[in-house]
Structures are given as structure tokens and as C-alpha cells.
Length: 235
Image (cartoon, rainbow, N blue to C red; front, side, top):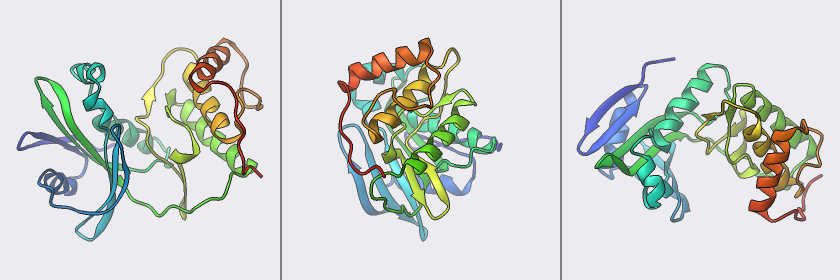
């Protein structure tokens, strides 16, 4: 894996592995990029398709981290979502998990040690639209999840909106790729998230080892989601 590089521009810190992306970071700060499409604009997240030097990228700002005071305070002690995504995902790609959207750049501004603004840039790919979910397709997604969990890494929001079909295969997005160190609560929670967002059930599929970690994850998930639901479109 290449060495992580860091540079300062105005009040921002730029992080990248390839010098070519430093200039992109400077232009993001100077608002000198072309916004092709704003994909998501909420209090929690800003996501846009951008164009720079003839190439397309995805730009994301995890606003929730800057707005919620408790999360903002925690950034005193953490890298933050943008930098964590850049470092963790590139490490996994280097270890052969090539099903992630590759992150290229993190831009972070801190004030009094806390993150007040941040962005990260990933590769852009053309999404193939899907109609409903095929059971065979969901089983393939579970296999990707197992490869991730075998590294003791969890996705955090393992649902079809973050599992993208492309001409070059399936890509996972919107994950900081954080480690877990004890038990399998996190891996079970990922699998329950996928089951709930596709079949609408909790714990009925055959991909669980029904131990204490599964029971704990199902209990927490059932509280957060309020039971089962009906989902249409599975074939």
C-alpha cells in the first residue's frame, strides 16, 4: 500500500495517496469544480457527481459529523469519517477486497481541534438500475459481506442502496470500513440490515450462526426498526 500523503491548503488539510489528487482538493476548497448532479442534499449528508479535468467523481460531505455536537466533540479524538474512509478502504482494496468504490482524497478543516467541515472523493461509476431483488443476487451480496467480515471489518449500513450494480460488477459504497475486535455482533447486524431491507424479516434466513451475538444484534435491530415489514419485488 502506498504512503498516505498530507498537505495544507488555506485552513484545510488534504490527504491523498496520489499527488494528482492534491490539485483536485485545492479546487474543491476554492469551489472551482463543476457539479454535474446533486445526488443527496440533507442535513446529514451532501453527495454530488462532479467533473474535474474531464473526469467524473463522487464528492461527499458527512455533515452529520459537523452538526451533531456530541459527534463533533468526538472528532477531537478521531480521524473523522472522510479520512477514515480514505485510509481504511484503500487498505482493504490493497488486501484484495476490490468491490469498494475507491476513495482518492479527503479534505478536512478543524477548529479548536474539532472537525467543522470535511469532504471525500471517490471514483464514479455508472449504476445499472435494478427492479426488485433476485434471491440469487442477495445471496451474492451475503458472500461479499462474509469476505468483509472475515477481515473483522463491518459495513455499518449494509443495504441495497449501498450495494451498486455496475458493468464491472458489484461495488459497495458509504462505509468507513471500521474494524471490530470482539465477537460477531457487528457482522450479524450487517446481515440483519440486509435481510430487513430486502425480505423485510429479521433472522429468518439461513446465513446466521444463532449464537449470543446474533441474538444481541437481532434484539437491537428489532428495537431500532420496530419489527418486520412487507417488502415487494423479490423474485
